[in-house]
Image (tube, one colour):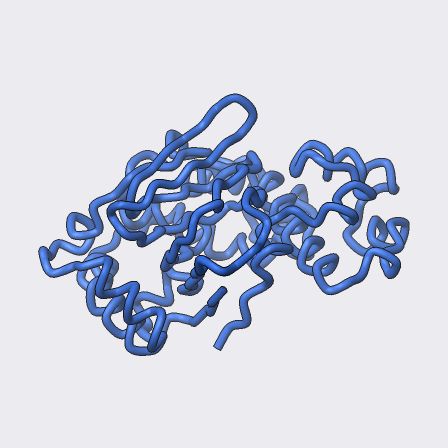
Length: 278
């Protein structure tokens, strides 16, 4: 298995892109074949070979995509079919970025997987996913240089308004500020902040705050052995009201109780790791 993660190098791309990442499962890899992708408020552009099919399952609903596709913000946990070898190059966009890039309606995209022609996004007919993925396997910096050349004309033509600018102020506060205090901190009504946030992201501030907290919690658990996990301590550290609140939250988001998850370790972070940024 190969994996890496890189930060954008061009300023107008870094405004909207969180990072680039690459994952390859080779034929000899014996990893878990059906990892779970936990909720994420960010959109990911997945660049894949055109002949490779991908399936995202939640309950009885299966969404299929062949080749490159979008994984839009999702409040549900998806089960992925990674039973066959694959290579994918991902572009993780910042929360709310698609509002400024005019990608469909942010509310109608929620929990959706959608095939995409990357040439249509970049406004060029020179994009070749095969060549880009080969470069990503051998030389990650060269691959990102090529990718940024393709993305640059699209991302420089963006749309900003008072709502997107306000959301950019709100996002850093979500990690440490109760949602009901954010309006006061920005000298605005709570109703104004909530409306703008939903308009730009398609999610409530509470939903995004919960997803960011879940991500931090899972990153923490990834670094601990099962015997090192104290669930009372974890509940307190991540500001759950008590251990029962933590149990309910994990069961509703990833479908497992804390004890069961600690044994199974079946999320994408457990199977593929937390890619180091370079």
